[in-house]
Image (tube, rainbow over all chains, first blue to last red; front, side, top):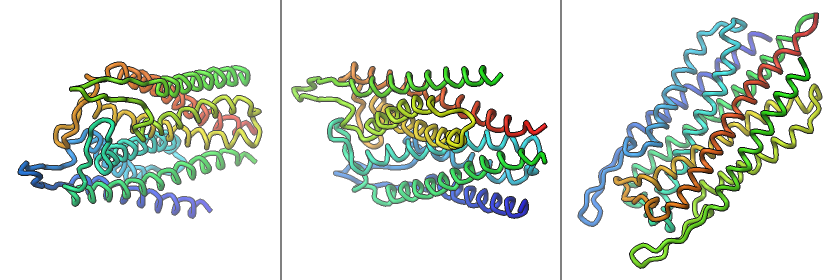
Length: 162
Length: 162
């Protein structure tokens, strides 16, 4: 039973790390230059603060997920992991939400604010950002499962007094 | 000791509910009409999907915080509360992040995407959104404390076998 717990935990952590790394990498390599009415338009993630936050958050989450695999189950540090899992989960939610909000303006614009959509001009760039968002969302869902599973696992072994 | 736990929990829930309600209300009443180069510009929260999400998320969180006060400590439902607390915490993080990202574009624009800042034209509106963001952030911090406190409280009483 303990071995099964450990196996599920390892699989979830590896899945979260992989999806988070993919999200960060897809966002970093998004880059496109387009000419629009004679004006050259360059699009890359580092021009948007939310996208930079996205890359940092998912890179940190990916590294963290791998590091946690080294923590011995039942140790004092493992009790702290649930706390940091919740923090990382919230960090990823913030990154996905901020990137999603800006992507929506990029795709649909905001007529009331006078912000025009740009995705028709830089389609490949927008495709990359959408890919990063999907990968990030998958990682976030796996993190949510990890947190729910950890909550369950923390509550259980502590009751085995008899 | 149990009474102190309960008192801290009630105070935190009321603080979270109050700040969340304030955030939702400040955002809803944000409205301004300005004339810019002869063009009338109307700014209100419902024109931006992220701001609508913000209002819904904080209204739900405020109602939820008050409802949780009715849950009897130690009951089966109270075990479920930690799970829903984490979900609400993530929801609020997403709302603050998405609103923050759009507010940043409103304040500073994004020259690379051709999106101009609008806060110079609708200062009162931007002030309201900033106020809602601050209030929302306070509510989020209190929620974080609630989650950390609940994690602690869930782990403790379950070990009192001897």
